[in-house]
Image 1 (cartoon, one colour):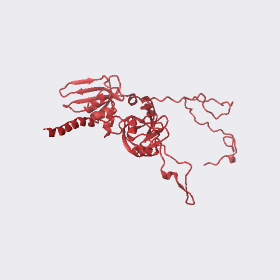
Image 2 (tube, rainbow, N blue to C red):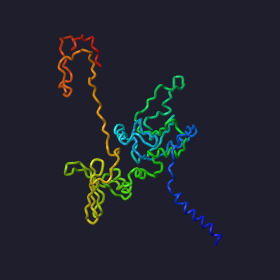
Image 3 (tube, rainbow, N blue to C red):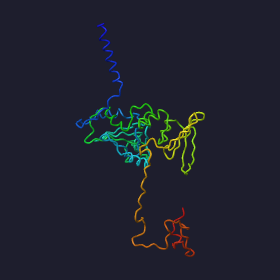
Amino acid sequence: MTRHRFPLLAAASLLLVLPTLAQDPKPVPPPGPDAPKLTQQTGMLIMRDFTAEPVFARTMFPMGLKGLHIKDGKVSPNEQGVAAMVAENGPAARVGDRVIITNVAIHEKSIAFEINGGPKKHGKWYQHIQVGVTGTMATPGGVNKSLDARGSVVTLEFDKYVPEMTGDQVRAMLALVFDFKALNQAEAYEKTLPPKVQEAIKNHQVLVGMDREMVTYAKGRPPRKIRDKDDNGVDYEEWIYGNPPEEVDFVRFQGAVVARLEIMTVDGKKIVRTEKEVDLPSAETEVAQKKPAEKPANAPTLRRPGEQVEGPQPSRTTTPTTPYPPPVDNGPGNSPDGMPPHQLAPAM
């Protein structure tokens, strides 16, 4: 009996350790303030490790040169700022989208990670070379770069310099905007939602206040859609799921979110819900309004200082009936403006 006691104790100890190993690893702390400066070798490893890596977006990425910034565990700009940038330039990636880190640039106090080609178009190597008459190669003064870049960038910022760090530490800091562990787009998208919405999507349920994307993940694409007006004259779009005698769901959208949910159960009961059950972040539901450009007090003119306007001028709000004045007859042999015919420019 004594001979078998130690193997049994070892097996029991292993069973106690296995649940601990199965848990998610502890979060990786960022580099401390006393960390040394990033070495060139580590910088090359970071660039090699992250370039061309596919990830999923945890937040909205706006197009444009500004992009997103991460410093001290906070992302800037805030949701309202991102919504304003998206309204102006358009989105480079939405929540849950699969993106590719296409370039990593290390600067003195920051590391920039470009996604989907970055915010500006990079010229090809052959665009920087031209062949001269003698066969020699030269670099032209400027390269004609396309302006149709549709990517974005996120920048890790530091106070003094970029510190020495591991790849896991970089991933931990980028986890605010990137999901490195998701297996597919649906999983990455669900992780960004409130727990109540995640549970509803898993159970294929709709909540009042969901947007179209959430409903699609919960119920799939609607077999039927109806557009109409309610009793108050407000436009709505209704998605219909199911056919009698099965359960039928009528999901009514007003604007971007679900405003009414009507469920006809199998036993003939009618369930109607109109009270909001979930609140969405403002960046997903509000469209930033751009301020109109202010007009200058004095409109530009080609008149000299002190020169008076001859004749009545049409109002700016009305369209003149004759856009050009009729020609003036100054007699035979003369042009309409009084110049001899031989001084006029030949007709093209």
